[in-house]
Length: 394
Image (cartoon, rainbow, N blue to C red; front, side, top):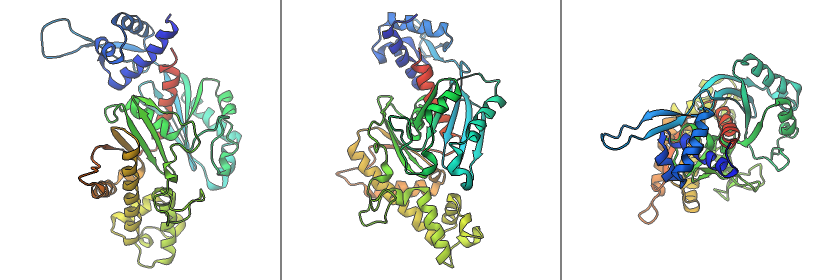
């Protein structure tokens, strides 16, 4: 068995193997400041439990000295259920401890049932049914990603009525196995750290843009947990003091220009008053407009849709410029459906360049784009469960 100190060190070792593996014991010792003797004890223990394994010898091009044996995380060591709870759907997926998806399902929630769904027995029945259907994957833990932060009592911080009865303690009790809840941005950041480390560096900001604009900050490989309620709510930073009213009570929040809900709401208003918009050629009534409709109109050259998208990217560029002066980080990872459109990415890069100057260049940060897929949030929930149950569980 490992001592308490060695258990703490094993978590750091596992995290480093996830982020940089395959990697040798020598490199781990040098990077983490752990003595070779202690490193040998801990890695042998982790190999005995089969959570890591020896990949083979490092090929360095030189045939001198002793070859370094590389270590990596063992796939299919354990299985996890990740669940993203969103306003209009619930996405579930089962992965192994390496983030490989073995089962997935999306359950759409109608507007009529939205207010009661998360507090109803149907919510629990849908989760249990998915677990039963894929019982061939024995689960070690469950992770939940939610599009808001949690209070100290485990309740979501939100003014939306259909979240008020979400009881995280009851969910954990029904699950019967370790269950973890995380703000979506935090779990997405961990997902990058564990499953896609070649994209994200040790220190980075993850910015999630959808119905809300949420931020997570990773420093030296550690996701900084938000202690204050509004930390990470980048969408409610004022970007235009003379702008439109926001639901939070302020005016000109980034949310009112960049969120999918705000863009769709404005597109519906345009549909009702403008006769020459391409939106009329795409849908038969304003109620049918969704975010993909706006993007389609934008790509067709619709003037109103182009204005909406340009304003969104212009104000996002200003927000990123401000972040670069507040947080010392190497990289910003941007996640959202809007970045699945190359033209939107091009506009953002253009506005970032326009904001630069010889005295304050904006190219000091690398900007990476994480393509949106509906399983991203559920996969991220698995990453959060793996971080707490497996990496910090020894």
